[in-house]
Image (cartoon, rainbow, N blue to C red; front, side, top):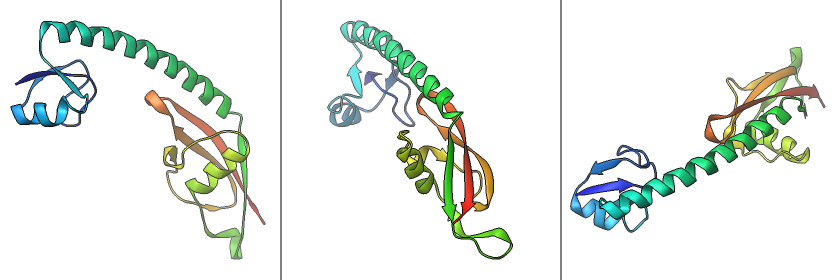
Length: 147
């Protein structure tokens, strides 16, 4: 059965693409969940309009995410930690701690979008990357100080 995908479906295709799937998969999964339309002339026109509208929405969201990333560049997060011998931390600075500190400054960022190349286990200044929506990345600085 031929269907037109409304949204990206893993291991099947991207939105707007016409794919052939088994009848049961289309009738019992894709169509009831709103992931696809049956491939007809009317649904082709409908999906074209949806794709144009989705492109406009994504472009607006991407612009706002880029503006947010620019604001993040000047942000410095300070996290106090307990320190042992040779200025080594007890434990490490986690994405959750960074997310909470950003929240205290008014920047709501999910901890899962914060990328730490390696755990932060030393005092000092560290650059941290955040993956935002639509492929936009932002960077900010984390200062780890002694309690």
